[in-house]
Image 1 (cartoon, helix red, strand yellow):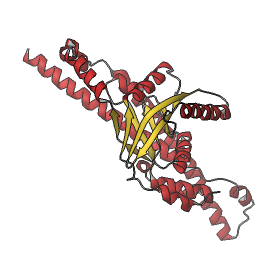
Image 2 (spheres, one colour; image 1 turned 90 degrees about the vertical axis):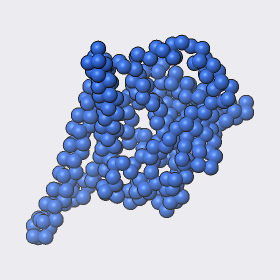
Image 3 (tube, rainbow, N blue to C red; image 1 turned 180 degrees about the horizontal axis):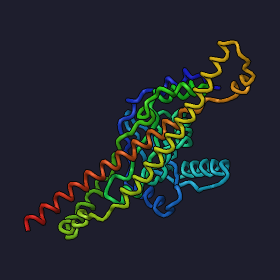
Amino acid sequence: MSDHNDILDITDDSDLKCVEIDALVVMRIMKHCNNNLPAVSTGILLGLDVETDLQVTNCFETPNAKDGEADDEYQVDMMRHLRDVNVDSNAVGWYQSAYLGNYLEPKLVESMFLYQESMKKSVVVIFDPMQDSIGKAPLKAFRLRGSFLKSLAIARETNDPSQLRNMPSDEVFQEIPIAIHNSLLVESFVMDWANNNPACKFDQFEHLDMENESFLEKNMHFLLECLDELGQEQQKLQFYERQAARMKVRKARGEDIGDAERFNTMQMPTQLETLLISNQIQTFCKQINNYTADSFGKLFLTSGFQKAN
């Protein structure tokens, strides 16, 4: 088992300031994820870290294989073939699709932990097609914060879940700004196309669409489910604490504690689930807040226009 002191080398949260993604990579991610809805799509990001930036220049999708070893072999073969044809083959993270920001799972933390152990500037890029459908930024880049990495490493080494007990939920992930990179020729083409396309200048009424309540309803539905799950996790922890306090009192009184051996085998509920659920609740609240802010603006605009007429 690795010493948790080794994690100190990857606890600097300021060493990565921006994730620069080529426009072609963005289109490939969007195409892959949209074509496989509602299934979760994943892929490998390839590129290079330059000072405080992570440049993502290529990617390839990974099959949804049932056998994890077969999936690993596919990734190794793909990277070897790309290297043979002189294409960027350095893995800098991975991407995956999500539905309404519902991606915070222990599996994501486990994968990110392993990535950052081998490459501290690696990230995961999340693509949310529902955000894209309402005009919001569909791509977000995340990595684990250094303080959480250290606490998680200590919790695993000591087998003590309480190391994460006082960890704030917003200290789990660090969001990294994303910049889309285009060559000068591509930017010139887009500018020329936009200037010569009348629809880009005048046909903008779809931005005033008020019929998108399904996005808000689904967010509220998932938010309520997360609140129920958080309550269940808290009940598990309270039950464990009551049992521990009861055993201590009986032991202090000198009473028979025949169940002590059984109690010692009980494991304290993991705090990782609570942290991720709390973080997921924050994500849903932010999405609801951003959506309603835009909706109220549209409502005031249209109501003012109706009064003027």
